Length: 311
Ligand code: BEZ
Ligand code: FE
Image 1: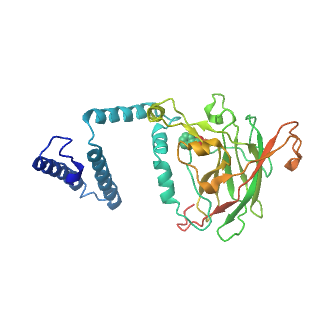
Image 2: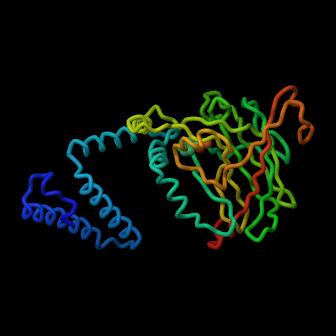
Image 3: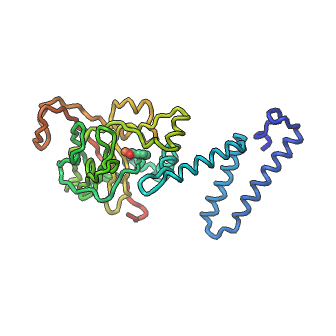
């Protein structure tokens, strides 16, 4: 691998460059060998592959000692800001696309099964239950939006009684758990009906930034990247015998879709039309919205069979 060492850049003769490469490769081999007797075969594979890629990176960029120190300081800061409420390591994984790549690897294309995307840090598992057509807003501000669809399997059969968790930020870009007053707003769960149908009132999603007041935010600023996520509404859908689906829907026409989603969560199949309804348009379930405009969107969900039988 002498090609990773440019003799001219480092003022090395060809012989010195060869010797340098030999030393670097010898070190890699020793580190790889140190994992040879790992009893767990998968752990061994993970560690040896990690070593190969990490050393390849260090050699590729010819990492300086000052840069290595800066990287350690950065990771230390990521650790320091992380606590029960703030997970900066997950955020780092998200903005590097590592979360989304892990999801992509683990949710292989399966017929027309709905695509998965990032979970995000704002799900809570004790959201209130609502019935068909009820409102999840719980006082959260924003433009009302009627969301409806069905839950089906890849053969087109309805899945009744699927559990559909939904959560979203308010129009100021905050989830309920980001306020200090213990409010429960912009989240609920409901069950699909006998024909797989579901519907609820939510809010038209609006773009908002991921937490960017920590080291990950500094990294985004230093690289001229926006912390803003494309507007979205989160779903998690579970039903016995099917893979749990964690996904969002995005809003067609949202300019942030062009600029880019800070955590790479957007998939074309998940972009939905939130059709604008003028004030006074009759509403589903006869909800009185006075002189407010509202939107409506359709999201038909297709669950993949769980071949591992673990749900
Ligand atoms: C979110 O969708 O809420 C989110 C996802 C990843 C990182 C931060 C926030
Ligand atoms: Fe979100």
